[in-house]
Amino acid sequence: MGFGLLKSYFKVIKREYYTEIHLGQLILNWICQRMFRINANVPFSVHHTSLIQGFHNISIGGRDSLMCLAGKGGCYWTVFEGSTLEIGEGTIWAFNVCIQTGNHVQGDFGKFEVASVKIGQNCWLANGSAILAGVTLGDNVIVGANSVVTKSFPSNVVIAGAPARIVKNSEGSDSLL
Ligand SMILES: CC(C)(COP(=O)(O)OP(=O)(O)OC[C@H]1O[C@@H](n2cnc3c(N)ncnc32)[C@H](O)[C@@H]1OP(=O)(O)O)[C@@H](O)C(=O)NCCC(=O)NCCS
Image (tube, rainbow, N blue to C red; front, side):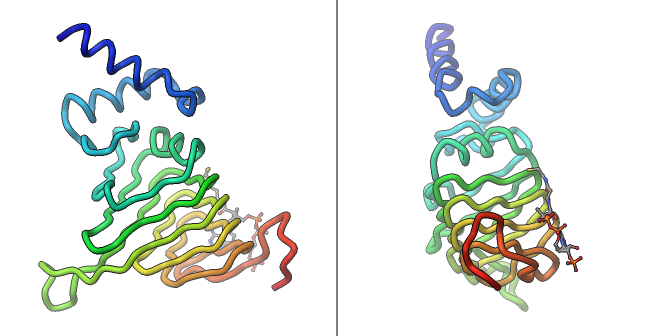
């Protein structure tokens, strides 16, 4: 029992993409996931204050995204059956980011209307942003703090506000608004 516990503990912390996460954070996450069974079905470290539901419908891009999953708290993601969430390589996010692939049906809150969400590569979802069902974001999109993204946007833009609108091109992009 003790040896098994130690083995799975080392399996978590030796992954190279966790090198920038505080060890105490990883241990706390591990305790919540493996002992208290919160986010237990996620095979990666999840910040202990986040809730990720429907992980089997999520495809998540590499190292940077996995670091955010472990290190950024207060995130609330629900990916309903019949929908998916795709997050491209290099995409990062901050604290309190909400992503939902469904809405309660108005007049019958027990039912849901679902629509998949896709976020491109090298995007940055800033603090407190909410990405609603059916949204697709291109590559290199920056979502400003506390934005509510209600519709889809192309690549290489900075979007902000509630509802989110394009405020400028993202830096390094060639496209002109
Ligand atoms: C989106 C962001 C990166 C843009 O920064 P920037 O490139 O310097 O953009 P600017 O400050 O030039 O803003 C451009 C316009 O968008 C508006 N804007 C920027 N961020 C906004 C936001 N979050 N909500 C609403 N409007 C916003 C500005 O008011 C400005 O409008 P104006 O042209 O009418 O004056 C920045 O505003 C932001 O939200 N940062 C997030 C910080 C954060 O969450 N950090 C967590 C650490 S990971």
